[in-house]
Image (cartoon, rainbow, N blue to C red; front, side):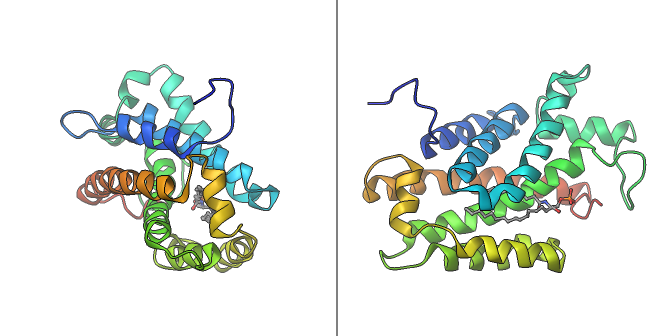
Length: 215
Ligand code: 1PZ
């Protein structure tokens, strides 16, 4: 039975946030996107301090977005679609090189969006993995297929080292806190398509507005 006092990470919590992300006409609510990320960071922190440099960067970006959600123009940040329109219409985005708006919502969210692709690939790989497969290999493969292309050598190197100390598949499943391996696989089966849909909607929006390379 779920204990409301339980502050441990649960994959279910992340799933719930990403479920709430999509509006009826497929807009992405920033509030739930951000809370999904908060849940993921909780998970990362429970894996150990080696991942501190990663969670620190993610938290920094989450906090920037939360600042907009709580700021004077919060209604303009209700969805990613509104945020993009508002920031572009008001010249609040550095489009080609870093300038007056190094912390725009658009460029900040893009970093998390790229990481969401890594997450999608990694979780799918975990979902279909066999008992003896290494999480470190699954994680590295997913990273090399996605996020790594946006990182300089030194970050790729640090990430590679961090992957090596990931717990094994069984321990990893336990940290997810949803029950047996079968239950984990089933929750992953629900989570991956949801994450994928949120990713695709954001990707299409950013591509249409030519925002995929924001500095
Ligand atoms: C479960 C194992 C976790 C592995 C996480 C895989 C991602 C490795 C990413 C390592 C990057 C950390 C250092 C920060 C790099 C930043 O330079 C970049 C670009 O931001 P900018 O410098 O332009 O402001 N930041 C990112 O790419 C965002 C990375 C967020 C990673 C969040 C991972 C969440 C993990 C969830 C665990 C299930």
